[in-house]
Amino acid sequence: MSDNQVLKIEVSLARVEERQMTLYSMVERSLAFHGDVANRLGALETLKTKVLAVAGVVGLACSMAWDVLKNRFN
Image (tube, rainbow, N blue to C red; front, top):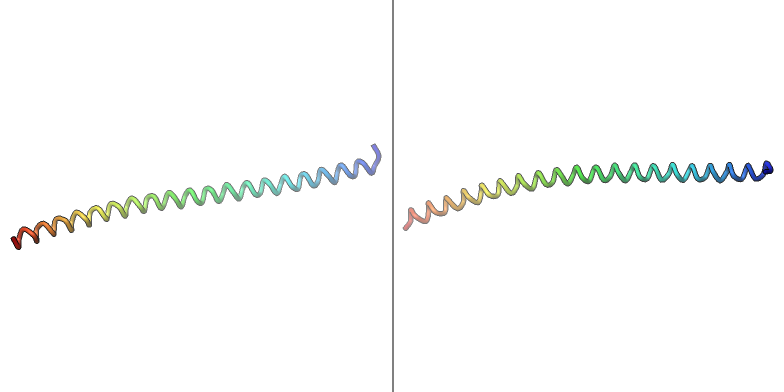
């Protein structure tokens, strides 16, 4: 092989390595974003459960108060 061919191969390999590093970086960012989204969704699910529990307790209290008032005025 001539020096020119070796130089072309080295340049080509450097470009491939640069692309590979770029792809690794993109995958790392994607995985970090996915983890962040998963954590936020988990927090929202916990919040939803708490809100539903509070709504159930408030609904039960209102229902009981309504029954007490209805019976008192009848």
